[in-house]
Amino acid sequence: MRGVFLTWLVCLCRFSVKTLIDRSCFETIDDTSPEFINFVSILEQILSHRLKGQVSWFGYESPRSFWDYVRVACSKVPHSCIHSIESMENVRSSRAKGRAWIRVALMEKRLSEYMSAALRDFKTTRRFYDDGAIMLGEEAGLLADTLIGLNAIDFSFCLKGEGLDGSYPAVIDYTPYLKFTQTSDSISSDEEEMRTLGSSGSEASTPEANMAASLRTDLSSWYSKCKRVEQKYRVVLEQKGYLEELVRLREAQLSESVSQNKALLQRFTEADLSHKLEKEQLEFIILELQDQLTVLKNHDLRSRQELTSHLTNQWPSPGALDTNAVALDTLLYQKCTGQWEEYGSIYCYISSLHVLKDTPSLRGLCGSLTSVASYKSLASLKSSEYLASPTTDMTSPGLTPS
Image (tube, rainbow, N blue to C red; front, top):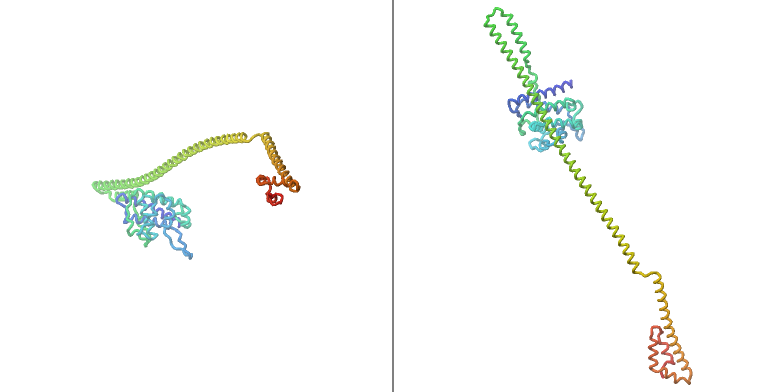
């Protein structure tokens, strides 16, 4: 029973799409069109079928609108109308936003694109719907294909009307689809039967009456044929519109893919060119660094050689150093020997003065030797840097002048 209900809803949606296409041939579709109101009600029932409720903090499950699912599943569609609908001030409830989304998508001729994008996001669809929902079945794919035919209709809606009010539920009117319509085949068969009965009941009728009856039958047959041709023409026209819209969609997708391919090829070419330029620059830098390294090595070797030659020319050889050392030692020895010989003569002189002092017969000679001039010369001699201080000798009684 549940499968029959799902199939019936999808069939109703297909019927409503066909009635919308037929009505659009004669008048503009707006919010007041009965066909549009019925189509929106059927689509809301499909999108709300077995939709999971929203669980609160206390564990209670509150009802949820299909807008919550559409807002998440269609957020990745390029140039989508989701953000503009969320920012609308006169649309506050979740159900009203969902109805506004349906109208905007129809005016943009992208309702089928939105449905296909939402169905491709199977993870999100599985999170919002319970098992057995229409959106989780195979019928959802057929529904998305059916909605492509609506792209041939130019819709015009007012997003501030009462149709967006989310206070009343969507009610489907089944009467347009339950009405009995006699087909052309049944009409022709009924007319044939009536003609047979009329001919059997009126054998004695006049030729004028027979001619009038034949004319009536011919007119009815031509009328039935015209109705059949018109019906076939409508079917072919619908198929033609559907195929044209499908071809237009595929051409748009193909052109978008071609443009993306060109952009990728251009990016690849630019990346390859920049890679080659970077490679050439790196090779040039490596060669330049190698040249600089070679120059630095040669300069370092030259500096080492110059330093070695400079040090070699600055210092004498080891043999010359030994000869100079011997000569310096000899000079110092000679200087010290001469100083000690001078010290010996001075000591002998001082000793002779002491001897003359101790001999009474020679004391007069000692006085002459210790005159002021002799004392000054002796003092100057003792003040030399090689003699000791003369204070000890000056205080001795033998050195006082007479």
